[in-house]
Amino acid sequence: FVVRSHFDPVRSRSDGSPAVSDKPNKEKFLRHPRSVRFENLRAEYVNTITATSATTAPSLTQVQSLTETAIYECGNDAGLDALRKLAALCELRIPYDFSNHDNTHTNIIDGSNERLISYIPQLLPQSTREEFLNAVQRMESNEWLSQNPDSVDGLPSLHLNLVSNGEPLFPNEKDIGGEEPKEHEFRLGIQQLHDIVHPFVYNLLLPEAKKMLQKSARSSATSLRVSDVFLRRYGQNICGGNRNGISAHYDVFSRVTAVVALDDVAADGRNGLFTTVLEDDSTGQTSNHKALRRFFPLHAGDGVLHTWDVLHGVDVEPGLNRTSLIVWFDEFPENEEEKEPMVSPWLVKHPDNHNDHSVNHILHFVLGSALSNTNVDDETVMCGMEKRIELFLRSASQRNSFALTRMGSLCEEGALTVNGQILEKKAFDLLEDLRPTAKLPPVLQELCNNHTSSQELAVRFWLEGAISGNPLAQKALADELMLESTQSGNEQLRILAAVLFSLAAQQGDQSASESLCRVVELDVVSRGVETKEAFSNSPVVRVANAAVTTSL
Ligand SMILES: O=C(O)CCC(=O)C(=O)O
Ligand SMILES: [Fe+2]
Image 1 (cartoon, rainbow, N blue to C red):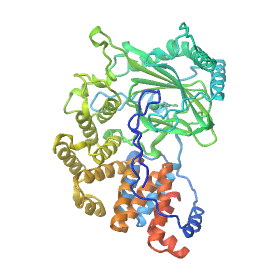
Image 2 (image 1 turned 90 degrees about the horizontal axis):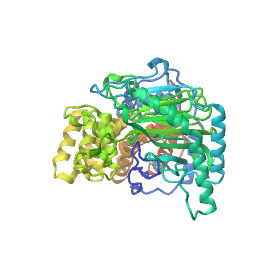
Image 3 (image 1 turned 135 degrees about the vertical axis):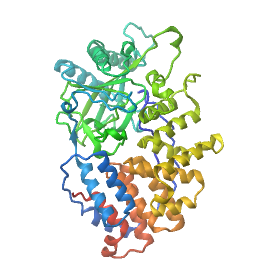
Image 4 (image 1 turned 30 degrees about the vertical axis):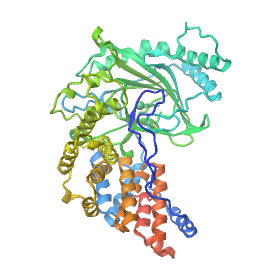
């Protein structure tokens, strides 16, 4: 029903290589022929959108409980009310409060995570910024920004690498013979950009990153080095493409990340780089729900540093034009025996990776993702599909939103059958602990009884991911339910699918909005709706309306 994205919320190397397979999933549900009548009716309901905005910043608990209500009270008044409240919360653009956290905040999960954030005012002087932006402009006018699929979302990345894996893309001293004039100009452009920021990156940012890590319980800052330096562009019609942001993710190959603002787009804390603030830190849960975004207020030249375990993304309102400079710091091997490349050693060597009782779900998810993105096959590294699934399962057992969603997809792909029934049994027990079958929404209880086990497991993982607020899980589950409902004619499944597509559409997910329109279309056709009144009374239409009508 939707072409499901197979992208994980993780940033792998910025060379544009996709994090995971970018093959589109088969469309499960064939597009229904568009009915002319529907077009008119839809125009009617789109016109009813009204907006009143919410004022208070929501907590994770609030967002999840509203989402749970929308799903369980599917299509009735309480459910519609929850959808309206969530719609209003999604419209908020709330600044991150640096002062509230004494420039850093630490969330202790199992005693050893970091989640350090540090603000560095006025790192790049105005003259440097201007020089840099002019050089970027020249690259852009040649359409030289990378069009490779971005490792987080698979769309053209619109970035330029200056340093990759510890090495400048083009070392200055290297004389490259036989270059085409365009290649030559490109190389000089990259070298110029690199030269402009070099002193700031190595003499100012690197010491700041080391200083920040000294606050960490697990400081191993002495071996910190600059791994990658790249710039990104956001806005309309950049090298023929648009980019309004990047969904929330972890940088899996960066121990510490620095982002420097090159313009004032983020000055009022309503645009640019955000993290998701989880006010209820005691649960250690994580969610990428739009309402939990907190934008870093950064003036041109300001920077922010964060550790590997800080969830972050970018969002800019249409019409704005943003450029950012990003630096990754990683750890290089301290002694000779370790010269072999090891994927993100701060993850592999983390004590929680060697502790069977650890509940560090962020580490387990990020390490599982890092291993999925590397070919390194080291005895000391937990590798192989089975180990990765074990890591995702451990993370999912702590209700980590990304691990739950990833597990749903792995089950759907049949990846849990690798080791007989053992992994499936583990997954089933885990799901029963999170929510016993008897407590599933009734319509899903029926569905799960009719299913083969791997599909049933996928549905249950996606349900948990969906309730935690994850739009990818919400879409994946909705897609599955539409397939079922067209086969069985079960209208309740269609209403729940509409709720789930609505929950993702509210968060700005374009493909979910399109799918929601198609559910409405199908509903109109299959129920033979003839009048405006019958249209606006349709449960699916009421759901779609509530999702875009914001009120508190
Ligand atoms: O542009 C930014 O501010 C950050 C981009 C980012 O998070 C990434 O490329 O991984
Ligand atoms: Fe990132």
